[in-house]
Image 1 (tube, one colour):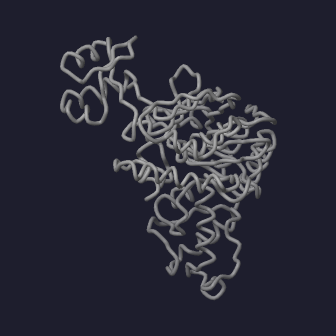
Image 2 (cartoon, one colour):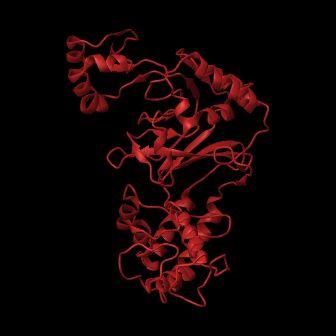
Image 3 (cartoon, one colour):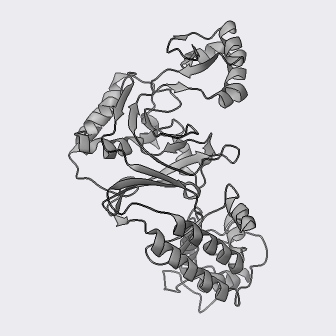
Length: 401
């Protein structure tokens, strides 16, 4: 967290050049892959194989329904507890394949089946990871809610997503970006391997991130932000009227449509903005809403990928907080990956993100970008993963089918 916050320190040049010095050290490191730089690669996405695996998993879950019994009660459970519901929990996790029964330092299931031991705690953590929950090992309300979902409902979720995967056509060569909205992650695939993976923040339920197929054409360092009209009317104009001085300090200026010249916020400027003749634009710099990096891709909805000052959101499991655009956990790493074939290294990326000068770099080989909505998939070990239907699209698709 300290490293994240350091990127947005308003302290001066020493802090900025520290980032450059850090980049010099990073530049000497070999390329790493994963989340966002993990020590190992994972296989590329395979829609056809995943679709078949999900369909097969759906059949297994329908079989599991014959032996499924829901847990009783709503009180949390954690390691060390002794409760009759521990027997129910262990049975459920064994049914789903998360409980292996492998002994641990305090495994006592055979001697006392009502004791929440370390083996059961590890099983709970595995289950939580598969369902997009914080792997705490504690069975609280969120985990109980997932455990209460019948296998027949999971089977429908698997079948529905098998259809989605079947319709998905991903390149087998070259490089592309894959964003799965309910998973809150972005992946860069190069030569059939996921070489970069990072967390994302996506649109709120009231401002959903759309599914898209496009290309990333430009990387913009130190971008300005022209406030979209919907946000202008509902959020920014009331703030500007209430405290124009504070908005000015945050870098907001009035700009007429069709002009690049900005002027300080004034009563007349706000009237023109409200009437549709002008809007607000935030100047580039460390306080900009888009952060230090923006990735441009052609689309009608004006959606793009970008940096963010709200780094603490990446510590959350569910991250639907934006106005529709996709915020990235490590935008500098993506910029480096996309511009590396053009001779950029991490030092140059770090230098480009200092200061206030806007720098717009065209990507020579624009990678395709797929923004998808998938709530179930299989991991490399053949285990199904589920995510919450944050936009209710599963429900809508099921009703349509």
